[in-house]
Image (cartoon, rainbow, N blue to C red; front, side):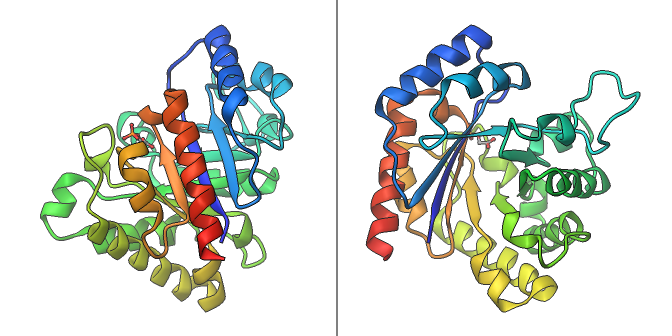
Length: 256
Ligand code: PGA
């Protein structure tokens, strides 16, 4: 199976710094058939970085989008405006849900907007620490997947990626345990199976995100059902990010 290493730069690096960092990555990122490498700079940096990168070496993702295609929505950027520029868009990241109060309806509409505009949505799902302590992880994941994919057609699912990102593991000192990740990924696949059938549930790419880095990445990528990583902090350190892409390439080769 193809592996995905996706770097979420979040609100870091200005336009100049983004270009420099993309150039640095370009020096050592391998081009491997088994791995899709995606970087997600800020909206401002997408265009300049797009002009400088080799699109066989890395693809571009946006960190968010608005779900209407155009109109009087001051300050927003639509999936229609990203069309042709970004090949991926992160939708429903927990920082969007928490800090910007995005709800399941917004996220569902964004998934649709991305698909409508030929951009692959990376639907982020994950439980908070409180939900985890209350034993609600499974319910939360099922709800978020069901809601996010509610209006996705079965002919569109092959464009969707899902990222399991336990909120308590994002920006923290350690990722979730391998057992927790394996269990969560299974829950997500089962929910996809209910909605789209067995084949879809086996083929939809599911990534893990939350304190992944070069030290733990290989192990996480080896967990059954994990098809890649959504990387925050470590994606801003060139040797870490390149190392993760190399590890993913090796694992993809071993799996063949
Ligand atoms: P982190 O962020 O790798 O810095 O924990 C992950 C994410 O938010 O996607």
